[in-house]
Length: 155
Image 1: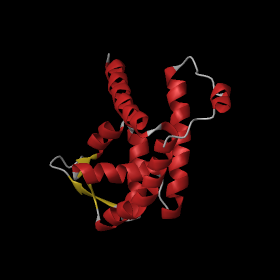
Image 2 (image 1 turned 180 degrees about the vertical axis):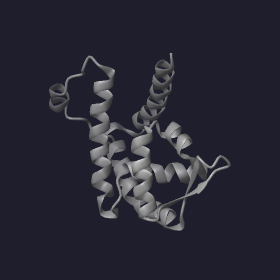
Image 3 (image 1 turned 45 degrees about the vertical axis):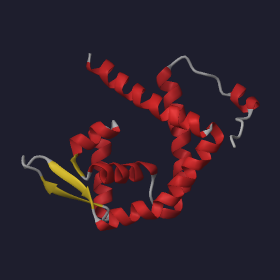
Image 4 (image 1 turned 90 degrees about the vertical axis):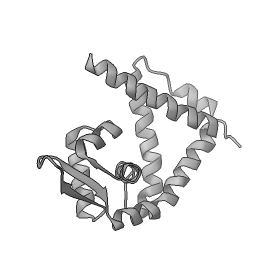
């Protein structure tokens, strides 16, 4: 059952000429939605996303996490430090001592499990507003946008 997006509200929200402005506006709105749902768990979507990524890959260097999530080093360092203080991730030296390898702790696994129900609620709210098929297509399209943008930036 898909809820229709209010056409009056949609008309009041113009499509901007800049793809970046449209994406950033949407990202801010979606971030707000997820953070509202995750607030009872004391976690933000940026932290939850890092927990999900580490669960998926097992362990990764900060550089690899930055690639996976398209995050700059400064933001990633700040977020990982906070997560280490909360006991959700741990770091160890890599083969090259300058490289730190991150992985979830038991506390991080528990936080991910605990917050997943609120994350699912945010997913459901967005899926209801857009329709599940559109939400899936959006994920695929945004992956393409990320790859295209990264490729364009290199050139």
